Length: 461
Picture (cartoon, helix red, strand yellow):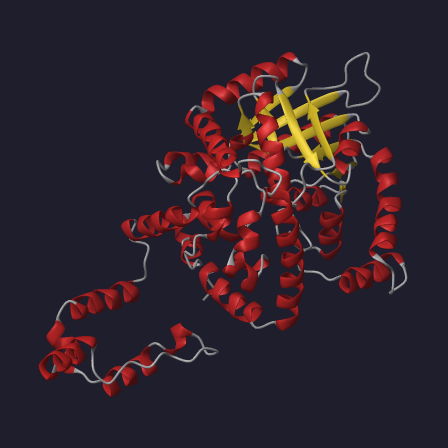
C-alpha cells in the first residue's frame, strides 16, 4: 500500500526534528534573520497602523479581484504586452510551451519565482530539451542539487557554507575552503554568459499593479533585471492574488515586504515593468507575456473566511517564527508553500483530503498572526480548516470512533472517577504511546481525579 502524504509528513517530521545538525543550521540562520527583522521593523513609525492599512487594501482587492484583474489586463495590453489566463498548472505549462515553440527557443534564464516552482516548470522544460537555469543564487544552488526550495524567501536556508562550498567544488572545481564571496563570484561568472545567450527570460512578480498595467519585482541580486533586460522575450508567471489597485500602494507594500522578508528598509532592486521595450528604450524584451495563474486560488477565494490566505505577500516571516517549521524544516511539508501560510492555503490549492494534516501541524501559538505584515489571522484560519476537514467527513473511521468514545466517557464523571490512576496510565501507555512519539515521555496521570481530590479536601476542611 502506497504511503500517504500525511504518513510521509509524520515520518519526515520525526527524522528532521532529531537531526541536530539540521536544527543547528536552521536556528543559526533564523537567529540572523531575527536580528535583521527587529532592526527592519523599528524603522516604521507606526507598524500596526501600516499592517492595518495593508490588510484593508488586500481585503478590498480580493473582494473585487475580478475587477482589478481586468483593469490590469486592459492596461498591460494597452502597453503592448499580452495576458494569458491559466486555470491550472498544466494549462500554464502548455501556454509557455507554445511561446517557446513560436520563438524556437532552446534556452531559458529564470529569476526567482515561486509560481514557476508551483507549476514545476523546470522539469517540464527539461523534458522538452530546453536548457533552463536559475539566476537567483539560492535557487541556482537548489537547482544544482535537484531539490525544491526549502523556504520561499531563502531557498537554500538548510545548507551551510561548507555544504555549498563542497557542491561548487564538485561541480565547478572551486576550492573547498572558498569563501561566500568567492562562491558568489563563481556563480556570477557562470550566469553572466547565460543571460546573453538565453532566448527567453522567465520571472515571477511580487505585485501586479492594476492602474498602470505593470508588474513589480523586488530583489537583492539584480538577476531579475538581467533576466528581463537581455532576452528578446519575457514571460512573467504570476498568481492572480498578487494584484494591488494602484502604484501608490507600493509605497506601503515594498517596505513591508522588505522589512518582514529580510529585515531591510527596502530591497536593493525594485523594478516596475509595464510591457515590451519601447522605441526610445535601451533594453528590455521585444515581446512580453504575463500568465495569470489560478491553480486552485479560486478554491481559496470561495472560502468566506479562509480567503484571507490570498492576502499573503510571501515575506516568509511566519515561517521564521513558527516553532513547527523551525523543528521540521521546509522540505517536510511536500508543498510549494511551507510553514503556517502553506498549512493554511495548501489544503485548498492541492486538496483538503490529501493535505488536511498540515492544518494540524501547528501549536496555535499565534506568532504567525502576530508578525504577518498584512494581518492574516493564520491561527484562526487553521482552526477553520480543521473544522472543514471534519465537516467534509475526511477523518479516518478509527479516529472518529476513538474521539466518539472519548467524548462519551469524558462527559460522564462516574466513569472518569471509576478508574484509578494506575488503570488510566496503563491504558494510555499501551494505546497512545505511538501517537505521542517515541522520543517523548508520556505524562503521568494522578492516582485520583481532580473531582475526587476536590471532594476529599472539601470534606476534610
